[in-house]
Length: 134
Image (cartoon, rainbow, N blue to C red):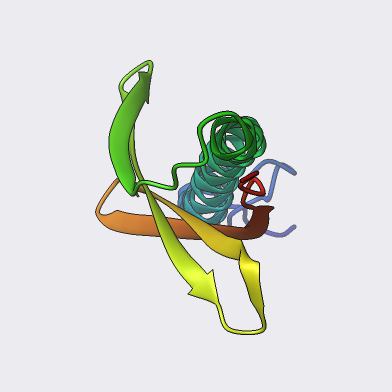
């Protein structure tokens, strides 16, 4: 007859150590998943801001060309606009085109802060100055 005193029987469940190791592994994995989600959220915010800037630039460049055609004036301008909590600052700078007297370059620069970073996008076009009739 064999004695069972002091012998352990393994009942097929998890031990406390195995459970603790599983919790630690899941915790580390969840940290990586949350960091990845935060990176995706920041990328989406940056993409949304760039889309806003692009739409503004297309509209502003058309406005600049129409103003120059209508008035013949090409004045440097600055301004800002806000969409929600986000503020965008812009500046239009005109300059001569060396190879054509009747053309001027117009450069639109838009800057905005997102978190701790400052972003800046530049757009350029060439505008035709109206011909002076004498």
